[in-house]
Length: 489
Image: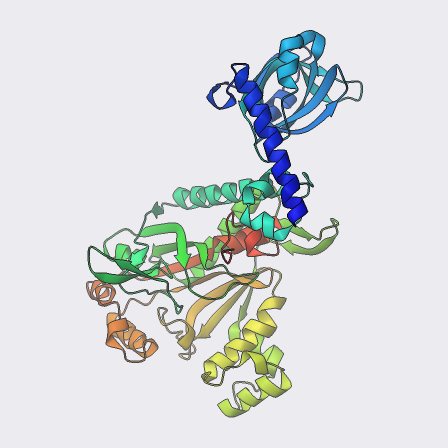
C-alpha cells in the first residue's frame, strides 16, 4: 500500500510539473475558454469528409507515434478520435500538446476524415487546454471494478465505465417520462415538507434532526402520503410528488436509507384505477426509454439470466391465495400458534420470525421471504391484511383485508397502492391502534384535515430506484443511485 501511495504521489508531482511548465509558457488551462460547435456524437453522426468541427471533452486514450499522435476525446454523448501531427501544429504547439495527460480536458478544432481502418476522426488544426488533471485515472481506465472505489468515488466510475453513465442518463429519462405521463393525465406536481413534526404514512424508523430556531425536534419524512392527501382535501384532485424519503434502517441489495419515491393520488379513483395507472405508466416509460416491453437482465458475461415481459394485461392474484399455494390450503383456518409453528418448522423461517411477531406478521414473513422473490413477471398482489395498511379502506368481500395491491416485478415490490381511507372516524381508530394508543404519535393536523372532508380516492407509491433496477437490469439498488450511503472511512 505504501508503495502504491508513493507511486501515486510521484505521478501527481509529475503532472503538477507539467502544469507549472504550461504556466511558464503563459498558458493557464483553468482560465481558458472554448465553445464546442457540437457534441462528439453529433460530429460522428453528421459526418461529411472535410467538414470543420469544434468539440471538447476529456482525453481518455492516446497513442504516441513520434511526430503524430492519436487521442480520444470523450464528452457526455460519446467519444471521437483526434489525429494530431507535428508538421501541422508546428514545434511550439506540438511541445504544448505533449504536456497533455489522460484525464485532461481539451477543446479541439479541425476537419472530419476517415482513417484507413474506417474510424471517423478529427484532423487537428488547433486546440485549447481547458483543465489539467492532477491525478491519474484509475489503473484500469475502462472497466473500473473495485466496488468500494466505484461507490465512494462515483465520478471515477462514470469516467471509467461508460455503461454506468448510460444507466444514470437513462434513469433521468425514466423520471422525465413519468412526469410526462402524469402531466398528460392532468396530475399536478407539488413539493411537500421533508422535515415533519410527526413522521407518518408508513411504519419505519425515522431520522431525527433538531431545529434550533424553533427549539424542537423534527423528523426526515418516511413517506409523502399524508401531506399529499391534505391537498386532496384542499381541492387538488390529481396530485403527485417525486422526492426523497429517509428511513433509519438497514442497507441491503434492495434498501438504501435515502431513496426516491413517486406518490400519486387521484380523487374519485380506487385501487383498481391505480392498477391501470401503474401498468400504463410503466409500459409507457419502457417503450419511450427502452423501445421495448421485454426487459432482459444479463450477467457480467452478457448472458441473459432473466426476461421480464411487461406486455399487458398484468397478472392479478389475491394475497391469501398466494399464501395458501405456498403454505397450505388450510393456512388461514388453523390457529395462530399452528401458523407460527409451520412457518418456523415446516417453512424454515425461524430466522425471520421475531419472538414478538403478531399473527399477521408471521404470514407477512411467509409472503416476503418465500413468495415475493418468485414474482418475476408483473403481478398485482391484491387484498392484503388490514393490519398492514391502516390508511386503506376495508374490502367489502372480506373485512379482514383492505382494497390494496402491491405491484411486484423482478422479485420485489415496485409499487403499493390502495383505495384511500377517507372516513375520519375509522381512520383515527386505525391509526390509534397502529400507534399502540400513544396519542403523541398521531398526526392530528392530518386527522383534522380529513374531518373537513376528503373525496374518495385512489393512491399509489412507486419506488423509483427499484423501478430503475428492473428496467435497466441492475441487481443492486446502489447501481441506480449515484451516491449510495456508505460507512465513512
